[in-house]
Image 1 (spheres, rainbow over the protein chains, first blue to last red):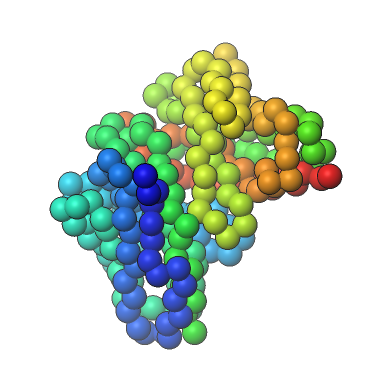
Image 2: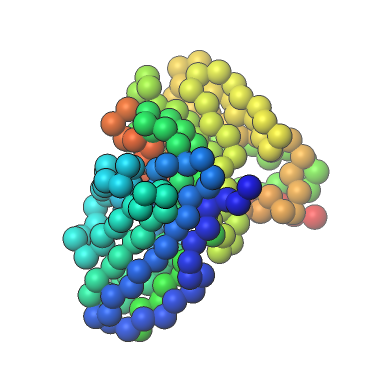
Amino acid sequence: DAGVTQSPTHLIKTRGQQVTLRCSPKSGHDTVSWYQQALGQGPQFIFQYYEEEERQRGNFPDRFSGHQFPNYSSELNVNALLLGDSALYLCASSHGLAGQETQYFGPGTRLLVL
Amino acid sequence: DAKTTQPTSMDCAEGRAANLPCNHSTISGNEYVYWYRQIHSQGPQYIIHGLKNNETNEMASLIITEDRKSSTLILPHATLRDTAVYYCIVGAGGTSYGKLTFGQGTILTVHP
């Protein structure tokens, strides 16, 4: 049973560019959450998708957007990249409406913005 | 979401029990206590969670005080591979829809 997978593992972009990160949830999971982790900090919640809708959003600008597909996989898009967007981007999947279900994290995508 | 307070760092000798404390004095009745750990450059790994009762699994034990204002994660026989940042998180209930609010965590270093 594959766990949460993310692609690519590493990415280098320049300021102003756009980037798309991808996540496949753990088998049986229908909810995907995205987190940003800057160096030396704990992960920060970006948003969560359930039934192809954004259910909850953290304190991130509109440059950060997402999508969930019918197969529950998800994409995170970041437009107009800034140097400060350099971070490890983590995807976590879970199952259930109540929100009590345990979230399982993928290995992350490390983004470097030059 | 309730805020948590953890020591910045702790040391433990290999083979001994590692006891990681967490204070969460503002926890509300429907909020769970979750523990995750993150080994360098990897995604956070789920360890254990609980609401009121003490919990144990193959990785660790979670002791929650009766007033639920603090908890302790116990790794019974620490190994070098347990060196990681340990995060104590409360919340993920009700309208939080599972949102996890990470703090700075505790850096646990296991020594030979």
